[in-house]
Image: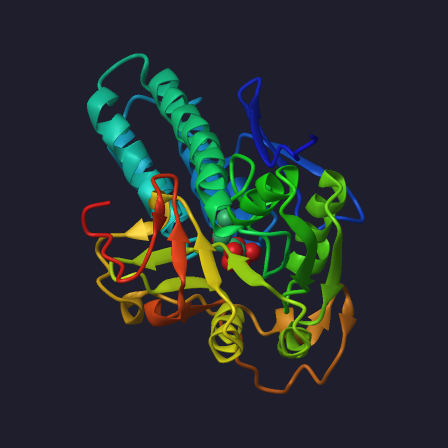
Length: 337
Ligand code: MRU
């Protein structure tokens, strides 16, 4: 099966599929400039929690390709801060940068610092590939029959360094005969569902249809959805999970309609410093993402707007959380995971 190579290191440069252009155009950004990569993360040219972590790790490593020996610590801190400032919610970003810091501390006086940093970034990437596949394996047990599944945003290979989280569970379940149909929320405002998840499902040959986010309730009322599965950007120790705005709506709807609601995410998405969801920082995006589609202004640009990128689903609405370790059932306690 063809899976898009979201982020790839080749000849000491990073190759990134520009996700703002998909599915209409398959443009590749080729760069070794950490500032360009930081902008790519900010603009969602590369997005999805694990993919952001992997990309930032490569950016930090690449910034050491040509570097004067003087003030190497200052350089590290500057690049680290810049990358950490790109997006606040996906904890994978901070976890990956912290891992890179460990390598920097260990080899900062070594001539092979650049090579060691690259090695570590590759390790983070390789690990993400393994985590995605283990999540898919562990997710199979939620399927007892052929299911109609609804998903939100994009938690596929485009959102990770590997084959994806929620979408990889769906893909693996499809290969095992458990998927009848996938309903794909378009995911306003940036359409990660109707552009990216739909693109991936089409490539995988999985039957799907796109719906507006607001159609989810009606689909459930008609008995057309057997389960909902999404990814997450940050999971608190008590299982509260932040994900793309609109995910909480789905969890509430599932609760009302007695439909299981699942989250699939690697343990690199767990934030041990957050005991509960209220501590998760929610990114607010530029209101232009709401008031302009493509280049077209769709409303008065002076109207005030509220644009949170994520919401937090409380743990009591989550049937289970699928990680690479196991299927975690409530009550959740991720303090020792
Ligand atoms: O704003 P985005 O597109 O980066 O948001 C991504 C999501 O909400 C994904 O569901 C989440 O990162 C999980 S990706 C495996």
